[in-house]
Length: 383
Image (cartoon, rainbow, N blue to C red; front, side, top):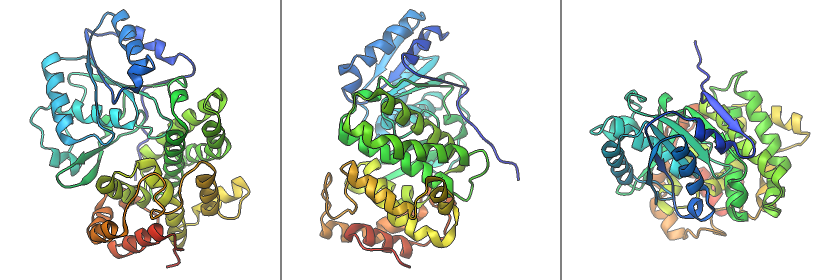
């Protein structure tokens, strides 16, 4: 079997890495961003000015939702079709980058059927534009990956899209951007990094190319996340977490993920539980579940010198202010009544998620339902 290892053509990292924007060649660029933070901190204007210095006319598409919707991606694609950019630049959190990837499809293929994307029937990209991604959070790693997560509000489902052409041409890893993140978002996105790395490590598609990247990312998160949460101005910790996010992204983009993400996608799509926090909550329960399907957790336990990686994850969650079960609702309240109402359907949809395919233990909607229940009530997974 032939495997593929794919990462952006160029990754620029370190202070002021954004300066590379002045060297791009083209006539027009569309910038996709989320809420107001990139504008408030001056990074949106900085990106625009650098692109203009490169001789480009710039269109800004802002206001992307935290859970980007199909409709706004269609609308963004239409705006791009009218403007005709040579470059699409996404700056911000994972939502901005995910949305930009989907907009790119609808720019280059205006009438493309979203259901085909969901089924991984992907059209070729780069017929009109290339892509640059600049992450503002140390978490999603969308700047590295072939993934995009788009929500259909009518169906209340987050769909993970996977397209080899989604891997950006250029990733810019500038630690000045995540240094502006508040502690809670730092914690949530940091645990997203941990989940990416641990799921990639135990994925059935993991290999000798992806494993070292996952291991180093895990080490960096354990060493630096609490430091970054406690002191946002600790630039060494910020830089290490930003690098960890990218390393984990390089690993999981090629090895894929598992049911932590499958389950986080579905509970997030219904209850708007922040993706990183959903991952943080689910991760230790699923480590306990997956142990019957893999010995790969022992690999990282031996490297770290710990007895139980699930317990170490629980300790880190507590240290950075995240809850270890859903019911406590520290940052998102989900009532027992509402949870039970959607549990069966949510479990079926999570089992059908693309990330389930590479989970190390073969699973079922019934098992996923039991894990959801354990994670909701804080009960041990022992089946």
